[in-house]
Amino acid sequence: MDKYIAANWKMNNDFSDIPSYVEYLDKNLENKNNVVVCVPHVMLKTFADAANGIVETGAENCYFAEKGAYTGETSAKMVKSAGASYVIIGHSERRQYFGETNEIVSKKIAAALSAGLKVIFCIGEKLEQKENFKEVLNEQIVDGLAGITDFSDIIVAYEPVWAIGTGVVATIDDIKTVHAYIKSVLKEKFGVDLPILYGGSVKPENSAEIMALEDVGGVLVGGACLKADSFAQIAKSR
Ligand code: PEP
Image (cartoon, protein in one colour):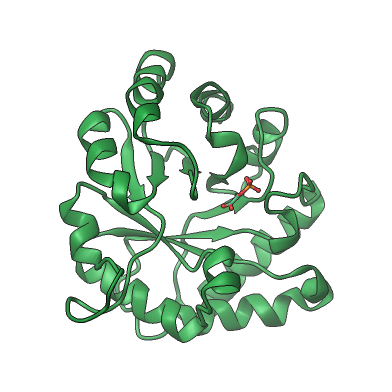
């Protein structure tokens, strides 16, 4: 199975970047399997229309309620109907700046799955939790996936918070150790073996070494995905 190459534009780029970004990936990527680009909600439809049949489109978040008086929110069904096939849930920036708890993350995962979206479920410890990473990740996994019975559309992304946007990448040994731990929790608690992506300052210079690791199912890329050429180089390194 091809490893996943997922981009997270966050609150960057613009409508005007979409045509050239997609065209670059189309022309320069021979293998476009499992390449996903997650963009802000407002750009989903435009991106999905441009990317149709080239790469997959993802959202960066969705709300758990189906509909109603939730001003400013976007439901999973709306995300899906805009043309997205993936959604990132539980990104550390959502947890940090928007108060997302494991309970909220769990409700969002359930809503996304029932809308027919594939979920990129983010977990990761903060710098001050590094010594205790097992406890933190175990809780995020067990609480985040509570109640899920069908795991076929779930991908986990391990993103140590201290490595996101900082230029500090986890060492190869750290990644091996933590991915093996996450794998063991998924097996022990849920009996599943899911792809586990690594995210945190991935760039063209380090992506090949990271993706060569057996327990790494691909990468989730922030800063280095904003330009199509750098994202394409990462995708080619798998
Ligand atoms: C992210 O926020 O998902 C991420 C991986 O960011 P960066 O690559 O910039 O560290």
